Amino acid sequence: MNQTPAYDYDVLIIGAGSAGLAALRAVRRHTQRFALIDAGPGGTTCARVGCMPSKLLLEAAHAFHRRHQFEAFGLRGSEQLSADIPAVLQRVRAERDRFVAGVLQTTADLGPRAITGRARILDPHTVEVDGQRRLTARSLIIATGSKPHVPDEWQALGDRVLTTDTLFEQTDLPARIAVLGLGPLGTEMAQALAHLGLDVTAFHSDDHLAGLADPKVNAALIQSMASSMQLQLGQMPELRAFDGHAITVGAGAFSTQVDAVLAATGRRPAIEGLGLENLGLALNERGLPEVDPHTLQLGGLSVFWAGDVNPDRALLHEATDEGEIAANNALSEEPRAFARRTPLAITFTEPSVAAIGMPYDPHWSDEVAIGGVDFADQGRARAGLRNQGVLRLYARADGGELLGAQLCAPAGEHLAHLLAWAIARRSSVAELLEMPFYHPVIEEGLRTALRDLQAHVHAPRATPGPHYCEQSSLDCLD
Image (cartoon, rainbow, N blue to C red; front, top):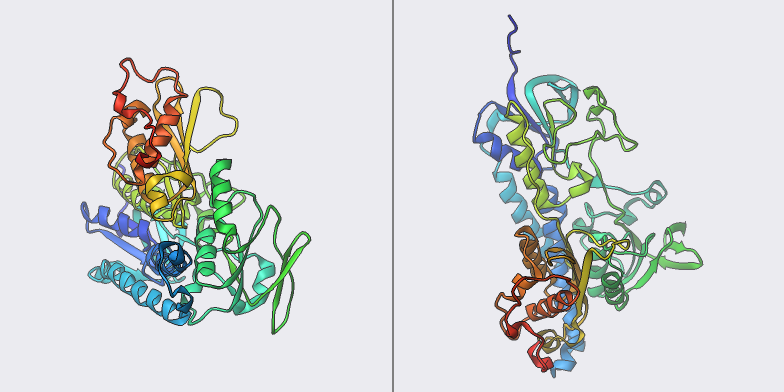
């Protein structure tokens, strides 16, 4: 008669980041036979080096940059303002440390079930810690997160090449800096540094910034970014020379000298030395196994994958969802497929950037209708001198179900949430136009975009919407 093997634990969670802590919370609802293994530093990527310190820096930068609009508002004396960079960074670290302390408190009561050390997987049920202690479990959850990627040639700069893991630890910043990579985080940090008064040159090998695909939205972001920094797009940046005084960085025929480089060329899954090869699964060219996106299971094993270690959904809300999914399936006899939330990604520039739902595809047929709005003449945006940017909406042409959106717009983070909720509820354009819109608010720009989109929908609704959804003849009312 076969007997179930006696394991030390029901579940071993490898990694104490956002996904690992979400998995921990879910596991503790059902069993106390678990352990959390983490090599440190603790505090999650988001709290320690990601979401929170970057937003602290951005808030200071955006506040300081507003001085350029004071004269237009009739406010005098803006030329007397200055940015005390050491003080800005000190506040970033102080607030960051408060967020980190709160995160660390979540594991303070685990006692021996919180294991500090580097985990290596020996087989689908066995993990070795620091090459010495072996632990067994019925299920494993891999939530080891990610780390910054610095191309080999740039590592020769030593401590003059910064990453988002080291940027916030600086007590001061040099006057001239090159930013390599304009993905979401690189775009945020390039604008933050430029708005604080640094001389920034930003390089990106692609022509599209912050993961945007819609050309009109991307053009609006490029225009905004170019107003405060030098942009070099479409060519790979090169380290051409460096000495004790300056670093020469170039792309194509362009060349410039800077004092430091911020490498924002993306993060990579933190899997070095993890022993994935011992799971007996095929690994791709990046050393990663295939993951079921709905169960988060690896192959047919009782091994599950969650968080930033999955590069396709490296966002905090996705990481916490994945921690919950992985934990529930790790404790189940049969893994269950979970529906995933509407895709939502926000870049906190000014104007802010977002991609929601179905991404833009230049090869769309006439089955998808497109509408939009330019915020140049939007009433509330003009009142606040924030009238820059565009919003583009995508809907099913037959019936008008909202499918997706991309934007570079004032209050974009809030518009993005409204759109994500509407897409999740499978709302049609006609239904959204029946929702209340106050005046004067930025959301009236969304209404203008919905009206434009409605004009391209073939069969919006069996019964036409009320006349008060129609375009006003007065610009000030929209």
